[in-house]
Amino acid sequence: MTDDVDTVAEGGLDTEWGAIPGADEIRRIGLSNALREVTAPLHRRAERAGVISDIVRGRSSRSAYALLLRNLHLVYAEIERGLERHRASPAVRLIVLPEVYRADAIARDLETLYGSAEAADAVPVLPEGTAYAEAVRASAEGDGVRLIGHAYTRYLGDLSGGQTVSQVLAKTLGLDAGARNLYRFAGIDGLDAFKQRYRDAIDRAAFETDRPDAILAEGMRAFRFNIALFWAVQDAVGGASEPSGEPAPPPV
Ligand code: HEM
Image 1: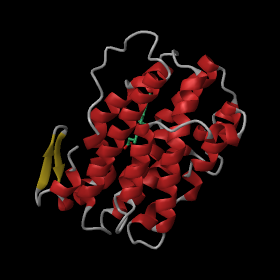
Image 2: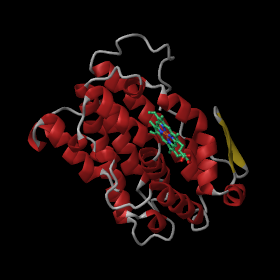
Image 3: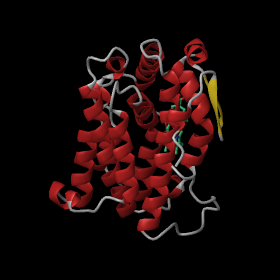
């Protein structure tokens, strides 16, 4: 595993996805734009990865989706614990917006999908889920700014493509609203306006830390953890009904 964060050079970092700009450049173009830019190739990979690809093509199963949520629940719990811990931090506090938190919503979905909270808790978490949650926990160490990369990746995803995923889950798996709370933001009026507000908050956060490049690198890592988890879930439930033609998952 390479740790982009520790090797970020003064003027920016060359990665397999391109260069990570330096702090001044990130602030000039906006951290949220920079995140979108550097993660764009990874977003394309995520859409085609494992269980997500199966869902979009209507080839998933209730058990595969439930297993995905079982693993993501841990991840959101770590993100939200970290955000709360850094409520007073000049950078992180800007994105402490509990109306977007998803851990409780996922817990309700898991109850519906597995029949009870106890039954859901009894399902073993995959190593890729544990690794992802552990990375989020580690990103909350110190000043916690790297959490912003994780929050960006999951919350803006749920508010964007997640809305399409929700419709597909209803149509192809017959999941009712009680199993799709992840995509229902009851406390938010107007998802597009909220997304803009969230992006503005991320942009402002770049001026409250001297390491906005570390947030970019962590956003990229977050996508890779997602991709690894999507493949692992597909693998655990017996693979896709036909090969997806995708190359092996990249190392996280
Ligand atoms: C099921 C497949 C997916 C589809 C169809 C999809 C679709 C989209 C679309 C259309 C947008 C743009 C929305 C806008 O500009 O307002 C978007 C944004 C985004 N998606 Fe996805 N997505 C998918 C999967 C994912 C996954 C798996 C992740 C991460 C784990 C993700 C993370 C994001 C993020 C972070 C953004 C915000 C980009 C930005 O504005 O900076 N998406 N997605």
